[in-house]
Image 1 (cartoon, rainbow, N blue to C red):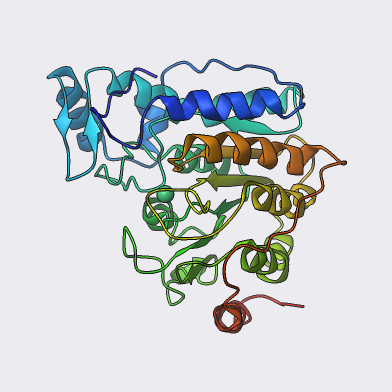
Image 2: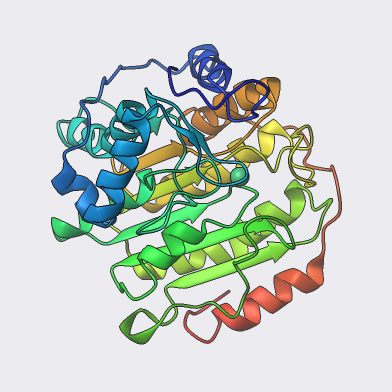
Length: 325
Ligand SMILES: [Zn+2]
């Protein structure tokens, strides 16, 4: 909450209150975890030591603008350390069996942060820190990124890592400009990276079909030990920064499809973007209900367009590496 991005910035503290209100309203019992700041060793798994110390000094000097839209203040260093450590802390608690699903409701978000640079409101790549921590322990990790923006940082960090599967659905032609179907991973990791970029006004019906007909079969064959979700809610129709047409229940429908892919206690959802407070609250609630509440039933996902040609292109590329139904 003390990570101050400046007056009028969309990535603001109220986002966390909205997500927590959503989780509390979901009817799912919650167990709190308060993460300690990340150690430099933990961060070093995905970030350069020189970048880490440069960012520490930048915040200690009072912060400011890092690029056109990424701001840090004096408290952003500690907030970033805690956000980066939250995923591993949640995994430890899940390993102890305290809950069936982890939810990292933290900011700053992370999926744009690359090895040596902050980008797009992100400083440390929270989901990547967690994935690296899990692969160091011998696990295979699948990351689903349904934020409306491509998670360029996460993709880059694991582009040559065959133990991390990265699957993203995002809007084409917007920030950060990466994330095309031709980016499929490299070397031994060829095929472990898939991007589905969709046109503006795409709605939930497309997302749910892409999830069930492309992403779910790939994840099933990859056989991950852990499933992490980069869960931005900026593909919501009410989001002010992007142009897709999802409704809150669509996140619940996607959660319902993902939940059975790993055993209970082996999944963590990470808040990324999402800038409309009501959309954040309702979508966060729908996500955990879809994941955990067997009585969850989504309303009709009929907002927006359903560009079938984009699904066929994704199937053609995915079929080079995976068996699709
Ligand atoms: Zn986003």
